[in-house]
Length: 151
Image (cartoon, rainbow, N blue to C red; front, top):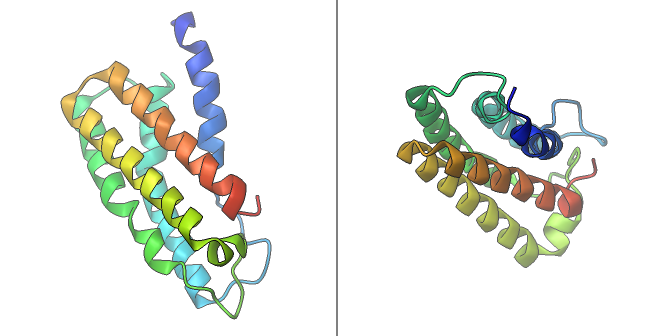
């Protein structure tokens, strides 16, 4: 194992945990919230697969990584189509989403920019740049979740 990667891997694991979300919502979920959760879950397989490569658990296959990054970039936009307040319950989503719409929009834009950068770096095949862009994407997840998600 390359011990120079250990600090980066530790950060990656921490950040990856911030992007996950496989449990049921803390509160009730209505149909809009369920659609939002499904959209987030739809982007996770590619994100997690890329994470295994970035963490050194799997070998870097440029073509596979490029395909995962492209799919992730496409799917990462879908959850934001489902951020209407759901009167039947919003699960993990905090009221701050609707109380601070400009801040939430800024987090969305920051996330999409990070995702697009990750995709661009993946298409370039520069693994060091990919790792940095992956970390930036995870940081964006964590930043948004710290204010707008209950766990």
